[in-house]
Length: 337
Ligand SMILES: *Cc1c(COP(=O)(O)O)cnc(C)c1O
Image 1 (spheres, rainbow, N blue to C red):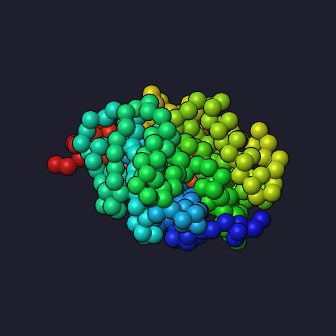
Image 2 (image 1 turned 135 degrees about the vertical axis):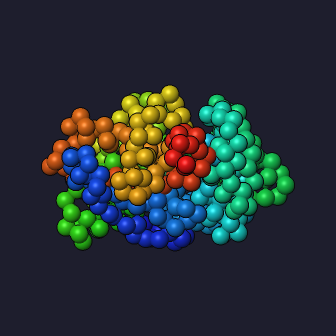
Image 3 (image 1 turned 30 degrees about the vertical axis):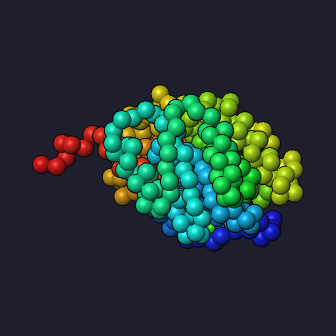
């Protein structure tokens, strides 16, 4: 598989580490647990969008763009990483944030990722929950074109075949790491949202004929919709790379039972999972994606869906900057005396 024909800006710290979680494995008494540290990509506190943006921003520059427009929820990690790479590449960056949760807490509206978006020099404007964000971006782009600018629109989460290439590449990187370490992993677990991460991994692993099973824990859509989104994008991405038909519907699996009341809305299992990892492994996860993904993985271990014979890798997709947008969720007031 040759990815060199796609323009790429190499800005991340690669390969990201693959580390054992010995304490968590012992505490849960289940499978051998590892973490793939895509929170350590090096771009503005890191995260999975870095891999996608290496291809997306390179594509924008190759197409002559001077301006990038993207969208996400208020505490979007994708928006923050887009703002950072645009700053480095001297592109103007406009971010549209959908107010999906309606939270009024000033920390949620201004701290965390929103603070970082603005520090990187992006303009930030808000849209109401339920707005057609793709249409909002296209209207915004048309206005800029009328002023003579050359905008490039990146879909939410950077999830299209170009963005998914970043996770095809991650499948290569992880497979190489496992081979070097002689580690026989059985499952790769991740939080799945706009689908590019999950789709790129499935496409890449199938092209490599890897036996690793990918388990996505949904953070927004119901199971059928999530699996269909991932499947469609994985098929398109594989076809773009000349491997049409390699991804089968049964290669895509999502468990969407850990979303709770909705996207970005805390669950008690998420709070438990984030605290557990912070205290047992010294690792920071996030309230919107990885915390819910972990809550799913932990529940699967407790229910015996993962057994002591399994070796499970959790893909840490980043997002801990959003913790500062959710200060009250973790109920720590009593800890300082
Ligand atoms: C965006 C994001 C995800 C989900 O990735 P998708 O490619 O959108 O499915 C998971 N974790 C974090 C921290 C994210 O920011």
